[in-house]
Image (cartoon, rainbow, N blue to C red; front, side, top):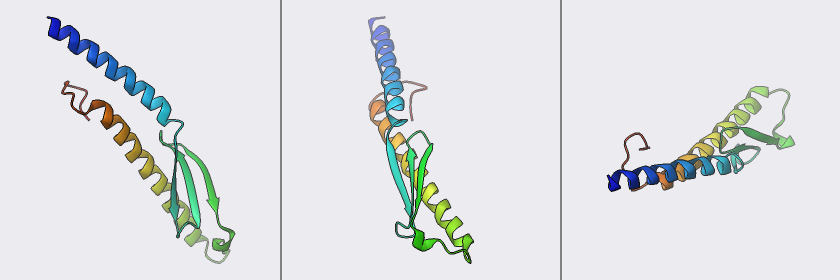
Length: 104
């Protein structure tokens, strides 16, 4: 049973580490861009959009649809980077551990 106790301690440590990393990721910022940087979106790695910056040169009242597409692209890019960062950080915690229910 000593092996089971060790396994439970290891699982508890992984769970604590995962909580700590999730808290850190909620504060970490990543950036997504579109239109060659004309639109920038900043997100936290927990999926929250923090800010959007738009270069005034791309604001054309006659082509609002293009601006909407750029904003959508930048936000989507920022959220993709946030998700990848989160997956990478969580993967570091669980690599090499084979506990049912903890695999990513």
